[in-house]
Image 1 (cartoon, rainbow, N blue to C red):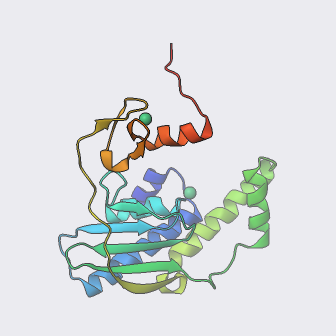
Image 2 (image 1 turned 180 degrees about the vertical axis):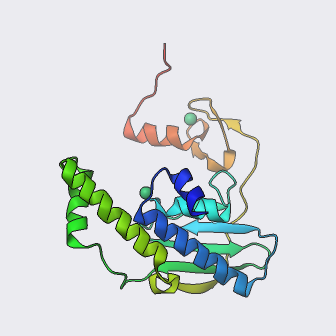
Length: 203
Ligand SMILES: [Zn+2]
Ligand SMILES: [Zn+2]
């Protein structure tokens, strides 16, 4: 499964490793309270970084199926619900997890803003891989706190016929539109009328 996470994400990194460990922990905890065999799961993630790719691979919850939801909190945390029982488990990275070592953190900054030379990039990769393996080898409960969550479970993905937006004419889910001066407007039109942004068709 680690291999599949790696293939899906495209590289190996500490964030993916945290997603792997945290998701397996959440799945195990959920099975303890909800002996679900044919799982109808819903995942709510609180990050939009590397972490969440392992969540999608391991739980089968995906953005497109509508059972993978994102809250933009910037936290390494995941809540996994069983729709059948209505119960859920939230795992969140502990506060006292060892911070990045200063050399690793310094190199990350350099790599991110393109100032690292070849030797520094190599050293960064070495430290990055080391931290990844440390996470994978750790006791999951030393990394994550877990708590039970009893609802409410996010609604199922909506399916509804689209209607044309009164601004751009593009078919849009009515539940996602807002009321404008001349009828329902898609959010993009509503936002661009506020920001003055304009889209023109390609010649
Ligand atoms: Zn990554
Ligand atoms: Zn529109």
